Image 1 (spheres, rainbow, N blue to C red):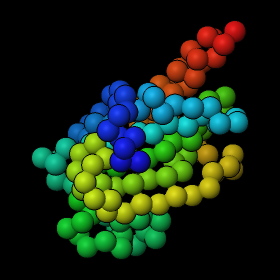
Image 2: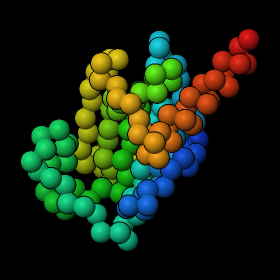
Image 3: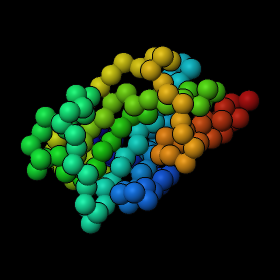
Image 4: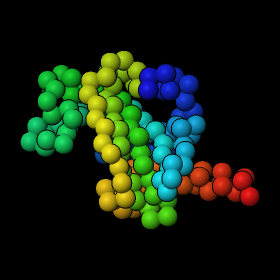
Length: 147
Protein backbone atom coordinates (compact mmCIF):
# COMPACT_ATOMS: atom_id res chain seq x y z
CA UNK A 1 0.00 0.00 0.00
CA UNK A 2 2.76 2.44 0.80
CA UNK A 3 4.31 2.01 -2.66
CA UNK A 4 0.91 2.57 -4.25
CA UNK A 5 0.53 5.89 -2.41
CA UNK A 6 3.90 7.07 -3.77
CA UNK A 7 3.01 6.53 -7.44
CA UNK A 8 -0.72 7.14 -7.28
CA UNK A 9 -2.70 9.81 -9.11
CA UNK A 10 -4.54 11.47 -6.21
CA UNK A 11 -7.42 13.76 -7.26
CA UNK A 12 -9.16 16.00 -4.66
CA UNK A 13 -12.87 15.16 -4.40
CA UNK A 14 -14.08 16.51 -1.05
CA UNK A 15 -13.18 18.86 1.79
CA UNK A 16 -14.83 18.47 5.15
CA UNK A 17 -16.14 21.72 6.59
CA UNK A 18 -16.34 20.04 10.00
CA UNK A 19 -12.68 19.15 10.43
CA UNK A 20 -11.15 20.77 7.32
CA UNK A 21 -9.69 17.45 6.17
CA UNK A 22 -8.99 16.99 2.46
CA UNK A 23 -10.08 13.80 0.70
CA UNK A 24 -8.55 12.49 -2.51
CA UNK A 25 -9.25 9.51 -4.77
CA UNK A 26 -6.44 7.63 -6.49
CA UNK A 27 -7.71 7.82 -10.05
CA UNK A 28 -5.28 5.07 -11.14
CA UNK A 29 -6.69 2.63 -8.56
CA UNK A 30 -10.27 2.65 -9.91
CA UNK A 31 -11.26 -0.80 -11.11
CA UNK A 32 -14.40 -2.79 -11.78
CA UNK A 33 -14.50 -6.07 -9.90
CA UNK A 34 -17.64 -7.99 -10.80
CA UNK A 35 -20.63 -5.78 -10.03
CA UNK A 36 -18.59 -3.41 -7.84
CA UNK A 37 -16.15 -0.60 -8.52
CA UNK A 38 -13.21 -0.16 -6.16
CA UNK A 39 -10.94 2.78 -5.45
CA UNK A 40 -8.43 3.91 -2.84
CA UNK A 41 -9.31 7.12 -0.98
CA UNK A 42 -7.06 9.15 1.29
CA UNK A 43 -7.95 11.60 4.04
CA UNK A 44 -5.28 14.13 4.97
CA UNK A 45 -6.20 15.66 8.28
CA UNK A 46 -5.86 19.35 9.02
CA UNK A 47 -4.06 19.24 12.34
CA UNK A 48 -4.76 22.90 13.11
CA UNK A 49 -8.32 21.79 13.92
CA UNK A 50 -8.61 20.03 17.26
CA UNK A 51 -9.35 16.38 16.44
CA UNK A 52 -12.29 14.73 18.11
CA UNK A 53 -11.36 12.17 20.71
CA UNK A 54 -12.22 8.71 19.52
CA UNK A 55 -14.77 6.83 21.54
CA UNK A 56 -13.26 3.72 23.14
CA UNK A 57 -16.82 2.42 23.61
CA UNK A 58 -17.15 1.59 19.92
CA UNK A 59 -15.53 -1.80 19.33
CA UNK A 60 -15.60 -1.31 15.55
CA UNK A 61 -13.27 1.67 15.95
CA UNK A 62 -9.79 0.30 15.11
CA UNK A 63 -8.11 3.18 16.94
CA UNK A 64 -10.01 2.57 20.17
CA UNK A 65 -7.29 0.25 21.47
CA UNK A 66 -4.45 2.69 20.79
CA UNK A 67 -2.94 5.15 23.29
CA UNK A 68 -4.40 8.65 22.80
CA UNK A 69 -1.10 9.94 21.37
CA UNK A 70 -1.31 7.42 18.52
CA UNK A 71 -4.99 8.12 17.83
CA UNK A 72 -4.11 11.46 16.24
CA UNK A 73 -3.29 10.04 12.83
CA UNK A 74 -2.35 12.38 9.97
CA UNK A 75 -3.81 10.35 7.12
CA UNK A 76 -6.31 7.56 6.61
CA UNK A 77 -6.25 5.43 3.45
CA UNK A 78 -9.33 3.37 2.69
CA UNK A 79 -10.47 1.01 -0.04
CA UNK A 80 -13.98 1.94 -1.11
CA UNK A 81 -16.26 -0.66 -2.66
CA UNK A 82 -19.04 0.92 -4.70
CA UNK A 83 -22.18 -0.32 -6.38
CA UNK A 84 -22.66 2.39 -9.01
CA UNK A 85 -26.09 1.12 -10.09
CA UNK A 86 -27.60 1.11 -6.58
CA UNK A 87 -25.53 4.07 -5.29
CA UNK A 88 -24.21 2.14 -2.30
CA UNK A 89 -20.75 2.09 -0.72
CA UNK A 90 -18.70 0.34 1.95
CA UNK A 91 -15.11 0.41 3.12
CA UNK A 92 -13.28 -2.90 2.75
CA UNK A 93 -9.91 -1.85 4.13
CA UNK A 94 -8.60 1.04 6.17
CA UNK A 95 -5.12 2.06 7.26
CA UNK A 96 -4.30 4.90 9.66
CA UNK A 97 -0.88 6.50 9.09
CA UNK A 98 1.36 8.67 11.25
CA UNK A 99 2.21 10.97 8.31
CA UNK A 100 0.33 12.67 5.48
CA UNK A 101 -0.43 10.91 2.16
CA UNK A 102 -0.27 7.39 3.59
CA UNK A 103 3.32 7.68 4.68
CA UNK A 104 5.04 6.93 7.97
CA UNK A 105 4.02 4.17 10.36
CA UNK A 106 0.74 2.29 10.15
CA UNK A 107 -0.93 3.05 13.48
CA UNK A 108 -3.87 0.74 12.97
CA UNK A 109 -5.68 -1.07 10.18
CA UNK A 110 -8.71 -3.19 9.45
CA UNK A 111 -10.02 -5.39 6.66
CA UNK A 112 -13.49 -6.84 6.10
CA UNK A 113 -15.22 -8.92 3.48
CA UNK A 114 -17.73 -6.98 1.43
CA UNK A 115 -20.92 -8.23 -0.17
CA UNK A 116 -24.04 -6.45 -1.37
CA UNK A 117 -25.64 -6.79 2.09
CA UNK A 118 -22.97 -4.63 3.74
CA UNK A 119 -23.07 -1.74 1.28
CA UNK A 120 -25.07 1.27 2.46
CA UNK A 121 -26.86 4.07 0.64
CA UNK A 122 -24.93 7.31 0.50
CA UNK A 123 -26.30 10.49 2.05
CA UNK A 124 -26.36 13.62 -0.11
CA UNK A 125 -23.52 16.06 0.50
CA UNK A 126 -21.24 13.51 2.16
CA UNK A 127 -17.77 12.20 1.41
CA UNK A 128 -19.29 8.88 0.34
CA UNK A 129 -21.45 10.64 -2.24
CA UNK A 130 -18.44 12.58 -3.58
CA UNK A 131 -16.38 9.38 -3.88
CA UNK A 132 -19.27 7.48 -5.49
CA UNK A 133 -19.90 10.24 -8.05
CA UNK A 134 -16.21 10.55 -8.95
CA UNK A 135 -15.57 6.81 -9.23
CA UNK A 136 -18.78 5.97 -11.08
CA UNK A 137 -18.23 8.80 -13.57
CA UNK A 138 -14.77 7.37 -14.32
CA UNK A 139 -16.19 3.86 -14.65
CA UNK A 140 -18.83 5.05 -17.12
CA UNK A 141 -16.20 6.95 -19.11
CA UNK A 142 -14.08 3.81 -19.29
CA UNK A 143 -17.03 1.68 -20.39
CA UNK A 144 -17.70 4.12 -23.25
CA UNK A 145 -14.17 3.62 -24.54
CA UNK A 146 -14.85 -0.12 -24.83
CA UNK A 147 -17.86 0.30 -27.11
